[in-house]
Image 1 (spheres, one colour):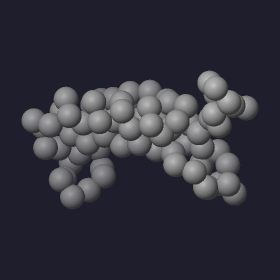
Image 2 (image 1 turned 180 degrees about the horizontal axis):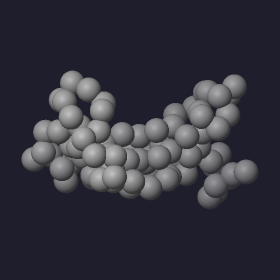
Image 3 (image 1 turned 180 degrees about the vertical axis):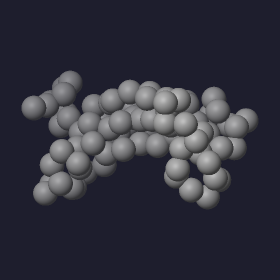
Image 4 (image 1 turned 90 degrees about the vertical axis):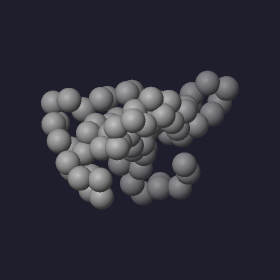
Length: 81
């Protein structure tokens, strides 16, 4: 299945939350995770990630992540962004 303009759809999830430690990836409150959205390509996911990360810059424990869902859905074809 392809996205707009014949571009291959490579799903990415953007989410974030407050971490318990600055050097870890354990979240303080899983109920408070901010699920930003699922995007059809890395470029749009990166733009959403950047906007959220910049908006939360005053909170050192707040982190946002981009997850390459397409790699989880089709691990045998892990090429691409």
